[in-house]
Length: 89
Image (cartoon, rainbow, N blue to C red; front, top):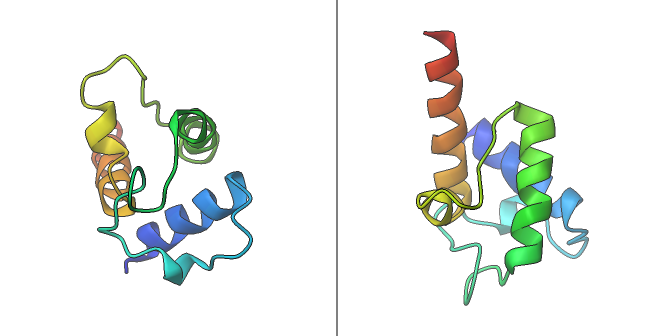
């Protein structure tokens, strides 16, 4: 697990009050929705706001790729890194 993935996993736990989990309990490729972590659309909205506050990135709910970005901790980390690199260019 990369530092970014660990940070995002902890953000998910803190934002969604998943106190019975540790960041290391959320494997980066594990799905966040459905049979994975079991998050729902309300959780996605809360998480999107937390990501925007922490990293300054926006994941619009109407963008067709939003579902792909929220697929897993690894996908979120990749999206955030890509956005940071795009802004740095």
